[in-house]
Image (cartoon, rainbow, N blue to C red; front, side):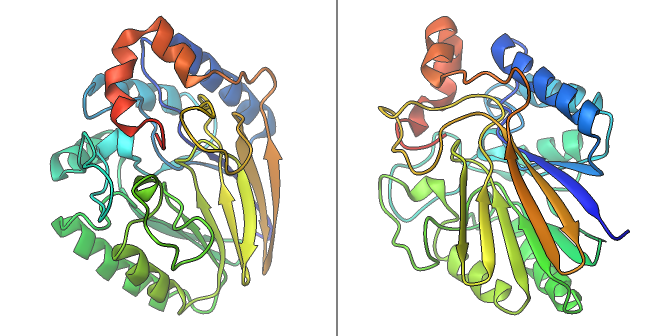
Length: 291
C-alpha cells in the first residue's frame, strides 16, 4: 500500500440519554460512509462516563460497530478513569484495572501497533501512565520492544492525552496537570520516543483543535466529535469547535486535513448540563480546566 488514509475522531462521549451527542456522532458516521478512509481511530473518551455509567461503554461500542470501515480504539479518562498527578486534586474516578478490563471487554486491546504505507503506527493507553498499575510497566516494556523493531520507519503515535502543552519539560500546574501525560511518566515516554523517527503525535482530550510542530514532530490535537467547553470553564489554547482530522500517509511523508462533518453542531457542555442534570456529576470534578 503506497497510500494510507486514516481518520481520527476523539471524545465522542456517547451515552443513550445524550441524544445531541449521538446526533453529532451520526453526522460523523455519515461523513465516514461518504469518504471511506482505510481506518478510523477513536483516540479516547468513547463513552460519556463509563466509570459511573457502564452502559455508556456498551452504547459507544454499538454505534462504532455500525461504521462501514475498520476501527481502532484507545481509552480515555471517561472510559477507564484518570491518571494520578503530582499536582491538583485527585480525580473523582482514578484509573483502575477493573475499568481497564471493562474497556478491553468492550473494545479490545488498549494498545496496538501496525504498519502501513511504510509507516509504523503505535497506539498507547495514556491513562495508565503514572498509575502504578501492573499494566503501566507492561506497556512501557511492550513499547520498548515495538520501538526497537520499527526498523527506521517513520512513527505515528496515537494516545488520548497530549504529551505536553508546548515542550516536554513544561511544568505541571495545579490548573492543568490532568490535561497532559503526567510526570514522571512523561519524561520516560519522551526519552523512549527519542530513539525513533517520531513524525506525528496525535491526541484528543482537550476538546480543542491544535496543530504545531516541535523539532521534526508534528503534534495534532483532535477536537471532540461531541461537544465544546466554554471559555468560562476552560482556557482557550486552540480552536474550540467539534470536528475530526484526516490523514493521508505515503512513504516518508504525510498530509493533515482539519475538517468538520456536514451538519456537525458545536454543542456546549453547559447546554448538556442544563438539559440533563444527570450528566453534571460525572464530569464536574474536572471543570473548569479539562474534561
